[in-house]
Length: 289
Image (cartoon, rainbow, N blue to C red; front, side):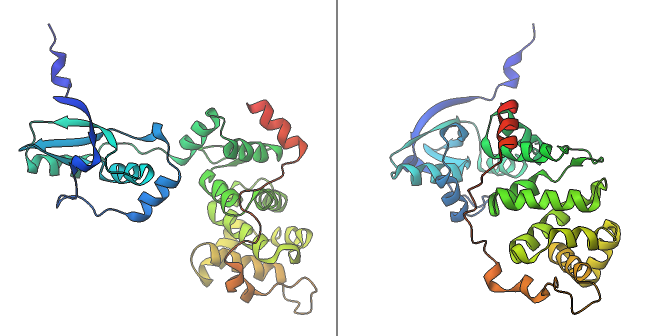
């Protein structure tokens, strides 16, 4: 007869008050107060994992979950608050350190597209809205690069949450209308750069001029030009402004590169959490749900 007990750790589950838990062993990382604060602001009871505790000499040493107990303490306002703990009675200090060091070694992290799809299944509004917006342009969100697809899903979410619906809408519209079926145009740096131009220049940026001037240059050439100037999104944004301006210094549509770096343009003026999807988007969200 098979002995399945060998696959079960020898633990008990106990609700232990936080004040009776000891953390910050030498092998652990320092507590990140910023992480604790952010998690507390977005507290969800169903996201809490059991704290792993090694009971040695009657003392409850936390070897996995030190941030969890600090988050619960902050949200509840008391270290009297209990948390569920998996209590190990047979560990020594060195074994605890080994478990801590290797706990994520064989864990496969979720990809951005997997998290996005899970949020769709959960009917979360942000992801439903982004999906409907992308599909309104005849595009789709995918893990695989292909014509008509966008893979940079975390960038779509970042633009949506950092700026707003309208910035993401105009970003996708400009890229789709400028480079059509070149799926490289929806790379993260391109998306971020176009969004940056929209946020900085607002109505100074003429969409028709953008499509005309930038449509004459391939994404590969644009990226090469960007690398010659500076790395990352700002290099791409600069390259776009250069192509947009062209060689005629008297053009009424010229944009100032210096404005890209103006301090006033670091923050977007509108409420980043508001958006007003059109009727077609609302219908598409309803259909997805």
